[in-house]
Image 1 (cartoon, rainbow, N blue to C red):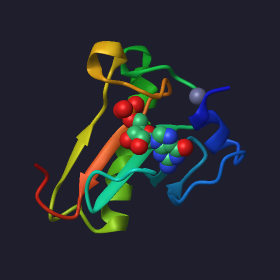
Image 2 (cartoon, helix red, strand yellow; image 1 turned 30 degrees about the vertical axis):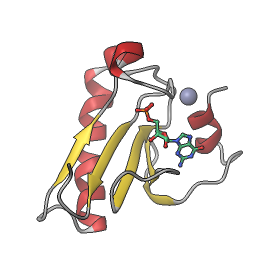
Image 3 (cartoon, helix red, strand yellow; image 1 turned 30 degrees about the horizontal axis):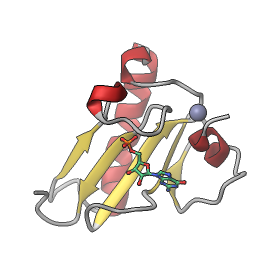
Image 4 (cartoon, rainbow, N blue to C red; image 1 turned 90 degrees about the vertical axis):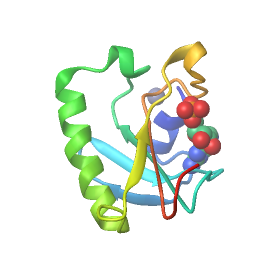
Length: 105
Ligand code: 5GP
Ligand code: ZN
């Protein structure tokens, strides 16, 4: 089982920001910005390339809610995913990074 599936199952502790039946948002263990949140589907999907339109639709709405909850919806944020080896993806469970809380370099 992958590390993010273990986080979903609460086998590994995480600092949860928000969750619903299908998605989880939690603080990155090694933040690269004042606010660095990872947003994942609870179901295992390897990467963006494999993500269905349904997952992406739900994830988008959830991410917008997370941005509002942590107060970056007006100030702005960077929202990105690394896809596959050349994209620099280290954890093989679809995740989007939400970076904010200051100008992102
Ligand atoms: P990637 O390079 O795959 O796009 O990003 C993986 C991210 O997961 C990295 O920013 C890394 O800091 C974060 N990360 C790796 N392991 C853990 C963990 O066990 N808990 C949390 N909260 N973040 C993790
Ligand atoms: Zn997984």
